[in-house]
Image 1 (cartoon, rainbow, N blue to C red):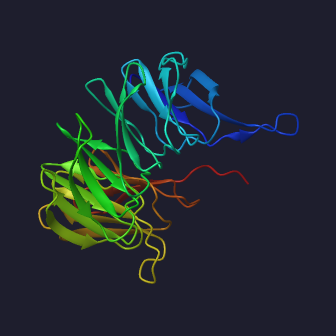
Image 2 (cartoon, rainbow, N blue to C red):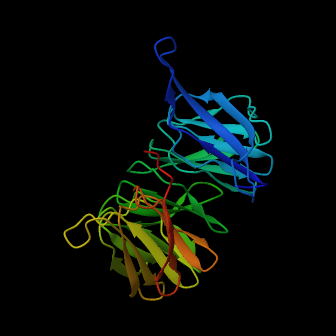
Length: 303
C-alpha cells in the first residue's frame, strides 16, 4: 500500500476447457477512504504463470513482484507495464516480499539464497547461499540484512557484499521473517520457540515459548513483541496472539483466537490486529498493552 495504491497478486484462476492455462494476475486498486468498491487502476495477467505468495513492494514509481515461478518482476506502479528488460530468475520460488535500500533490491528464495539486485536493471550484484530454503522476506537495518531459513537458523548478512556476519540457531524451521528493533533481532520457529538475539553479534538475549507453530514474523512495538501462532495443541486448539516484554521475554498477555493465525499481526492506532482463517471473524483487534479484545469483523458470507 503506497501512494494511494493497493497492489496485490493472486494464486491464479483456471482458464477452463478452451484455455487450460492458469492465469495469474497482479492488480492495482485505488485506496479510497469512502465505502464501496475500490476503483481499478490496472490489472496485468500476462507476466506471472504461477501463484503470487509474496506481497509486492512499491518503491517510488516501481512495484517489485515475486512469483512462485521463480521470477522477480519490476512493473510500472502507475500502468502495470514491465520496467526491466528481462525479469530476474531465481533458482526456485520467491515467497517473501523483497526489501529495498539505496538502489539495491534484496530478494530471498526457496533456492536457499539471498540475492542482491540492481533495482534499476534487475541484474544480480551478488548471491549468498544458506543451508535451508527461505520462505520469508529479508529484513534490513542500516548495514545488515537479516534472513531466516529452514535450516533452523537466522543470519545477519553484510548488505554491501553478502558476507555472513553471524548466524543464530533455532530449534526447528524458521518460516517467518525476523523482526529488528532497538538493537535486537526477534524470531520464532515452527515449534513455537521465540528468540531474541543481539543484532550486531547474534548473541542470545532470551528465549520464550508461544503455543503452537509460528509461521510468520513477530511484530515489535514500544518494547513489546507480538507473536501470532497456530496454537495446535491440547492446551490451545485454535490459535493465539502472545505479547512478550522485549527486555527479558516475560509473557505480558495472551489471547486465544477461534482459528489458527498464519499472518503477521499489524498495528492500527492503539490496537494490534490479526487475520483469522475462519468464518467467525476475518479480523480481530486487541489492546496493545492489555490484550483486551476491542473488535472483530466478520465477512458477509452469502447463503
